[in-house]
Image (tube, rainbow, N blue to C red; front, top):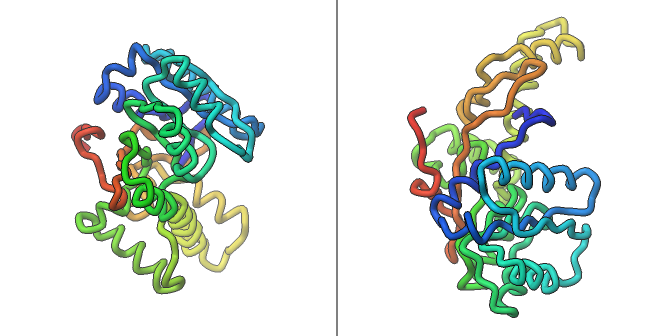
Length: 250
């Protein structure tokens, strides 16, 4: 799933701000990271919001390990931020609890892909109430397994090897990478060399990992896909939010 350094797909921020229009004036608070490899993601999100006309209320570069989120949430509340985009961390519990402790109730929270998984589901059940919370997907979410057999096949393959495996966005990207390697290695036949595998792998115009991902190129210089889906965290787990996603034809 190529994303060149000159591109970013933060379409969920635009879609959710259309769903919660007060955010356009109140602005989005970005919870980025002081970690050098993640800091640019926050800066790109800031530029994206400016480009689509959404106010950036605050850009926080949080430490790798946050002892308490209260001062960060207090800053967002004071800034008037109507939404929160959490790029770092993995567990929504301390973030939402800090919001509750100071009476801060943003219109929505958008979490990065690492939040999607059993930990967030457990947090949703434990917290009971929390602001509308979403994760942006670049692939088909597992919540659509009844509609897409490829998701059922992926679950079956993973669980046959690890019965209690956690199904996350990384499950999907790993499956895509494995399929790309396997198909490329098969095409190389007896000429199974690194150069051959890389050459085969980087020659696709329409790679989909069997339908898990929207069609995209794997060739050098490939652009990011514009396709996304939104899943929403509820007290009983994640659900695909078709209304917020507002899918277009194809």
